[in-house]
Structure formats: C-alpha cells, structure tokens
Length: 456
Ligand SMILES: Cc1ncc(COP(=O)(O)O)c(C=O)c1O
Image (cartoon, rainbow, N blue to C red; front, side, top):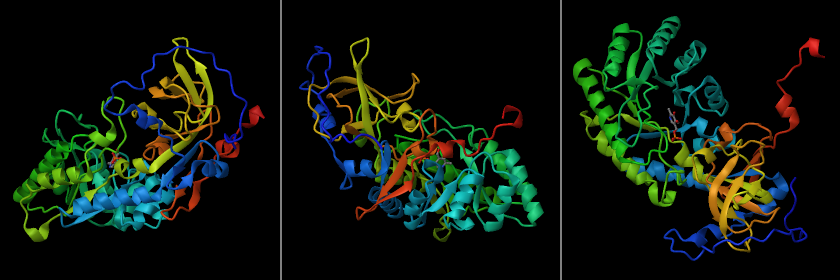
C-alpha cells in the first residue's frame, strides 16, 4: 500500500526557477477550474479508498452508469417505439460493471467467443446476445444459433461458415449483415468491417444469402466508428440503412425485424485534437437520438412492422463513470525547464492517454504557482506520458490526483507491463464500496507460464 500523504513529510527542497505567471491570463475555459481540489468520489473520501485498496486505483460510480443508461434509453424511447440497448462488453467487461447495465435492462453485445461466454456466465440468455465481430468460429456460431442470438455477419467467408453451421444444425437461423458506408467527411469509413453499401457489395451479400436458402435475413447492422462527434453522421447512417431496408422489402419482400446502429457516441472526454472541453463539444444523447430517428424516418414500412432499434453504446455509458486515483511519486525538472511529475499510474493502465487529454484534478489544496507540467507514468518507457502538457500547481510527492474520465476501454485494454494492474472498486448509489477486481500479484502474472525441462 502506498504512503499516506497525511503523514507530514519533511519539506522537500526544490531548485528555484523563474517562470512567467500565467494564471490570470484571459482564458475562456477558466484556468482556475483545473485546480479545484476534489477529495472524494460520490461522497467517499479518496484517502479512505486508497487506504483500503491501494494506489493507483480505478473507481467506478454505479450512479453515473445508471444515470447515463437511463438518459440514453429515455432519449431513444421518446422517439422510437421499440428500443433495445445492448451493452458493448469490450468497453469494460468486468462482471460487476456488466451487471449494472444488465440490471437496467441491457442485452449484451459481444465480439468474441470469450465475451459470449462471459455474458452467458453473467446470466444473459443467448437470445439476448448480439454477436458481432470479424471472427466467429464454427463452435461459437453453433452455440449462438442454437440459443437464438442475433448474429451479424461480417464478410462472405463468415456467410459461408454460417450456412455450413446451419446445415449441420438442420435449422434456418435468423441473421443480420453488417454494412459499412460513408457518413460524412468527418468520419473515416471503417471499411474493414461488414459489407460496403455504396459499392454494391452489401446487395451482393443479400442476394448470396437469400440464394443460399440456408439463412433468414432478419436485420441490418452498422457501427460507423467510435467517438463520433458529429451527430449528423448518425442521421446519414440511419437514412442509408433505412433506404437499404426499403429496397429489401420492395425487391425481395424481406422486412427486417431489427436495425442495429452500433455504438460510437462520444463521452465527455476531450481528444488531443479538441480545442474546447468535452462538455461543450460532445453531442447530448438527445442530439444523437434525434439524428438517428430523423434518418430512420425514411423507412417505408407499415406501423405494425416497425423494426426494433438496437444500440450498442459502450463508451458514452461508462467513460464518465470511471476515475483513476493516482499518487504523485516524484517531481523533476526537464532539460527544457518544464516541470515533470511522475505518477504511479502509467499508460499500461491508462490506454486512453494516447487519445484523450484527461482531466487531472489534485485531491488536496495545491500551493504554489501553476506552470506547464508534463505528467509521466512509472514505466521505464519513453511513451509513458499520461499528460503531455497541463498548467498545474506543484503537486507534492505522496499527494493524490484524480485522472478522468477513464471508465471506457482502460480496464479491458490494460496490461501487466512493467507494473501489475491495480484494483478496481465500485461505489453504489448508497455510498457502499466494493472491490470488483483485486490488485494483481506476481502469482497472477506467472500463472500460465511453464519452463521447459531442459532449462530446469
Ligand atoms: C460493433 C461494435 N459495437 C459497439 C461498439 C462500442 O462502441 P463505443 O464504445 O464507441 O460506443 C464497438 C466499438 O468499437 C463495436 O465495434
């Protein structure tokens, strides 16, 4: 467990340096906001959390997850009669986090057999699992078809594999196909997933699927990207998918049962390329929902055949619910005069540092003049930069900072590289704290290893 900063350390000597005082400069984002200390998360003191679970520490707020889920569900269901959210497992597949969303009514969206099994283990019936991704094995497809999962086909080889598995099972399972398409200048086409709409490949896939006679086309899927800041892109995507559904009905007499528009909504994080804070830039759930239902209004179907609208939102539901508590390990001066602060959490557990300019909030009242500071992690690797440049007051060794938002993709993409992975805790709406993954040990690291006899 790390040092308790409340134990008063002897004042450290820091070599004096002169830097221009900038705190009072005109700044429409208000420079002082960054230095407002925050010493608790959902009412639980940061020091208590560190005492009990160590530092660094991932902290998830159940209340924020539930609020975000309900806001999104409301925004969609106010505008569309049949809505189903499917929690995107890869965004954070800790069981406790998944169960918060399942308790709210979310199905599971998985992209591998491992995630499929994890969802089943969490008690989700196969029929409430949406199975996506470019690699689904025959065994996995067998289980998914037998249980009535929604399987969205990614490519022609998978289509053939689905037919083979369907023949073996002697059934004609319902499937969907994933479409890729251009949705505006700001969003690069994720052409590697699904069938291309504009080139005619998607229509070829439909003819191939229908001609094969082994599968029933029941749905259309699209996931245009992630952190899509332009809600208008969803209007384009929904409009194109609706047009495709109309063509299916007109030319082939197929009425789709569901339209799945994937995930991709932005959280309140701020990308490196973003000038304004996420709060001001990221569209609201209402804006995304409005864009989607605007696009879907192009559907030419009788009212009683309105398809189920599925969303597989991940990041925008969980990102803002996650905070990393980290402890200042050291301060130093770089050759160019900048102050550098070394934290105990690095990019092996804060993967999103490569994309986000995270908020760094001191937990105690900082003293001293703010100056440009680079925040490093503890790894002996040059890439271990948590924040390249931020105006920060001096942060004492042993003091805590909060890094946020970190709820999406950091836990699932973290790795034991040089350092083991920290514990994760969940705070309930009533303020109870539970460890939902313990700190890793050396035993965890070597668990699957073995040494060949000739080296013993
Ligand atoms: C098919 C699919 N659905 C849903 C998601 C979740 O996306 P996000 O976390 O951006 O909402 C992803 C992530 O890339 C995905 O690939």
